[in-house]
Length: 387
Ligand SMILES: *Cc1c(COP(=O)(O)O)cnc(C)c1O
Image 1 (tube, protein in one colour):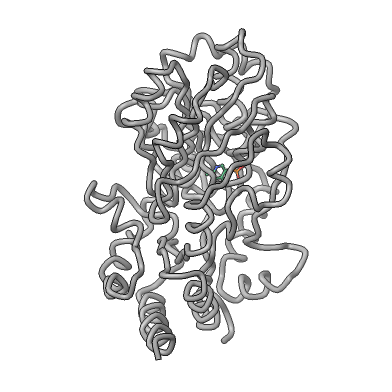
Image 2 (cartoon, helix red, strand yellow):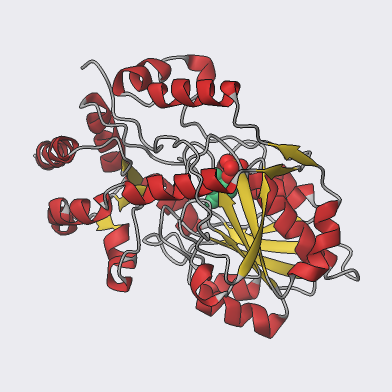
């Protein structure tokens, strides 16, 4: 096998001259940053600012999530408090566990959308209103953000990183609901601004980057050990700067993402036979009845066991499809995370979820033939496992 279909990553577009409004602009103002993690740092910082009397602020977040969220919380001097998942079969937080973790020091809940599946913002915003907390929607993996509809979240975080829906080779945004914006202006102005220059260097970087998305390049890059492609690690966040991203680039990135087929719908039909074999198709379970709004970032499946998941990830990769275990671990097991937590409890659903999750590509480089290969891999692979 010569090349491999990358797990994630849409092509980087050229900026357009468009002055279209972005999907959140009627409810939120935005501030661009150099990454999603920095944007989240700003969101947490703005929430802390509203609670001057709390010395040791705590922020609730799911126990299966991106370690950048932990880094963003501690960058502002707050403590992350983990909440277990509702069950093995959903990436959403357990409401019971969430409520039992609210203390006098809690200032915010981070609602993390998962691969295009948003959290239940209406439920969480009700809890936040009752307990006087801020609701931060981390929509790094979901585009457009869920809060654009009803403005449930006080702040929303987007990422324009390479593995995210709108791929601009980096960057992020914090969206600030308009009722908060006047109070947040001073806080934001304390952070320096850097310019994103769309010059020769940027165009060259884009060309090389898009070239690297090809099957052949991905298969080669994956073998370079120091690149550690796809590995999840904890990196602290030390400095936050605002970034001036030309609006036409964000508009173009958004259009590029929407051009991508709704592969989750195709997977839903092709892989429905997995239901009878003990698999869970997360997107079908959690999104389809709401009506999918756009392409998904990846397609998520929960295998009947870790063993079967691992066999299928290996088989798919041998067949040239970069299926993945995603983070591979619950947050506590990612090196460097535990030392930043005051309370270390058990999170059985997050552990189990991380051990059975398998993700499939959904990006603009996929073809119908890839779907056939994936179907065949599952059919023959699962047949041989059951023998
Ligand atoms: C990727 C990601 C981030 C961080 O975004 P970067 O732009 O990579 O810093 C934050 N939260 C979630 C859920 C993410 O997937």
